Length: 77
Image: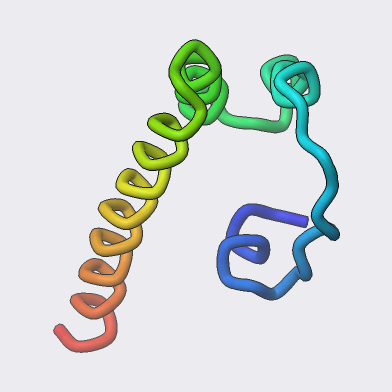
């Protein structure tokens, strides 16, 4: 599985299960994840979880809009 496939829905997401702070902290040790992801996750774990979730959603929306603009520029020069 790669990030492109996951983000574009080509791989079904895992069934919902209880996620704990400890399970999220384990991701910080995963060598396959980017430094950006691990840094952002580490900082998010220090914050209120609702605020961190909102920040993550805003970041996703901003990056998705940027990606769509780049894709449109490539497909329609």
